[in-house]
Image (cartoon, rainbow, N blue to C red):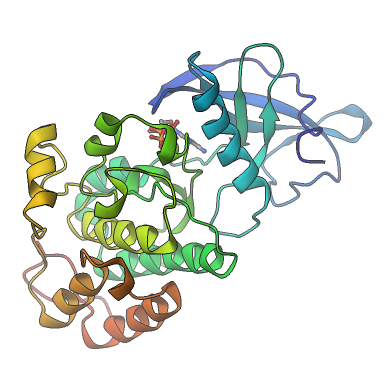
Length: 302
Ligand code: ATP
Ligand code: MG
């Protein structure tokens, strides 16, 4: 059972950072061998068929019932899914007053930080592979009519770097955290430009179209090596940007500009499904192998 499997003995090791109303630590989880997470093979073998795996503990700040429910809603969403490019959630612990989500530790951390650090070494092909992996996870959610609601490069985790020749990157979309509908308006404004415009006033009833917008923005963020224009603006600048139906700076090629304008339309119904996104991405790779605005020359790799 999902909730039952977390009979863990874990110790807090390292504080990894703060999220939206959470503190994140890395720790260890002791699981019975042959458990639900055989995909992980970087564990130490212990006696009695038990193994120890590295995990991330997301500890929800103490607040109120609504926030608790918004966190548990996400845990429940993640318990319904299983996909190569979605982070594996081991379970939640709701013992006492602390709500803790336990998920797979992904070695190379969040994509935004990774891209800023590896600016020079990441080429367009790498970016396309990552984009397709993200789109495949979102296509999977879409076919299950599940909405993620918090797609951004920070919430994409790098499992394999794919920088050495002959290797390719492997990423996993993380859980969306406390659901949008229970966050404050201010917290939603902060998420401009990733948050879909129709979700700013109320995060409830978010549809798959909301993820389609966020996917477009995240792809731009990837094109710009983790530095998205507008992301550092003040709340009122951000709010004004959406009120004026602002457009984010777009890369120069006409095919790419068309692709971005499809995802980044203020009319949710006009955005393409992830099925279409996947098909279009494949086409784009062929016509337009160069997606980094900073790359003046096409890749010269054979
Ligand atoms: P939000 O809901 O806003 O995404 P969050 O609680 O998910 O909030 P993040 O800001 O996404 O928190 O994550 C905080 C930091 O924790 C990340 O920058 C990253 O360094 C680390 N982190 C989160 N999840 C993982 C993971 N599965 N593996 C490794 N590191 C992680
Ligand atoms: Mg997160």
